[in-house]
Image 1: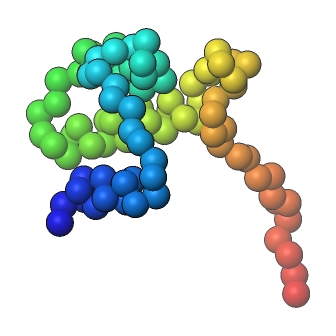
Image 2: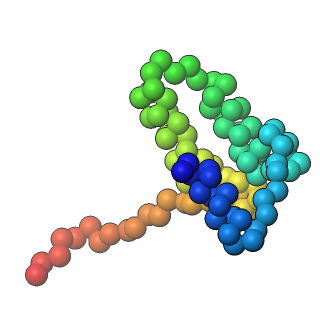
Length: 95
């Protein structure tokens, strides 16, 4: 049984129904469409990937920047998951 079929079976078993979202319909799936547009504009349209490994490295760097540094207007111009800086005592601890 495929994963898709397993999910469909589970949905039917719990009595839930799914809503069909037309592909590429920003009015039905706004968050995903917004992200896809930014991903394409800020990364994919500006890069030429010469290998799968290069694409993985560049996309991961962009993902980290998007989530930890890039301000998001919906969050009051803060990143969704800012990096935490832990200040440590510069003096060594003697036990």
